[in-house]
Image (cartoon, rainbow, N blue to C red; front, side, top):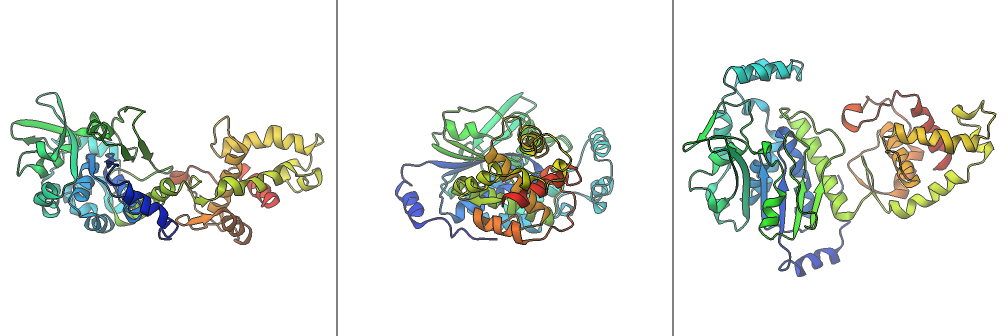
Length: 406
């Protein structure tokens, strides 16, 4: 993976000069195993020289947030890259899910049974958190840390920062924030708590209310309520265009993939890169010659396109009035897509077909050269992660068009 050598020294100097003016924080959304994505995004910002003054989260977001607040980012990253679900849950739960068979069991039925049987014991998770969270470090770090949970006993939302959490109760409140309905009842003191995601799964508002003027919200699109926030606030929302996996899929392979994706999505935000599945510099200007080639295609050029060979209607007219709208639908571009969006989507589609490494930052010319020189390989259907079905008949049309314009 390419390091962030592309970030200029001037940008880093500017960051330092404005450090006193900026109050920057991360808001981390809940989502179980999807939380590995947080680590990649944060890694990109930290390596870029961005300093943060606060971090808040819900559920797994609270767990990641407390590690960041205590200055233990590298430890948290290592945990995600090595932790397995067997470290978090007892064998009865694993057997019920048939986790060793890759979630082939009926998860919905399993979870219903667990709830009816009073739920999954969370003592192993509490022990795991206690061994890695240093409450003293969190309290003395100088970084604001906050979390969200909900008290069933009081019917009350808790959006609290570290100073409002009683001494010695930090792990309890973090566990309360992450208390999914599948777990056995959780009490802190006299109150019974449940996962904060039911009320506020990405607590951007907590940082806004504390006067933060630059907020990076990292979404997993996990189950829970994404609360509206003041659109006047300076909030950058970073989220994946792809499926991050099942919320219970705690395994190193999936975590490493999500971390890579998060890292590149962080770079995308920092460097203003283009692309949905790839990360491209200078695309705004470099796309124009390719689009111009599309406009300049002749009837002779288009005889190479299978869809057009037998057409008696002018081929160029059919291309722009019929086939291009079909391609936009196939590539999921929405109704009012631009030619820039179409060409970019076709380029990325071709790169996926050719199995070009997704986790690099490319300038657009280099990317196009790779598209020209790399042969198409047999690729597994990536529908589950990137939403494209390569078996669709229109896939051939994309390939034929790309040969004409790059």
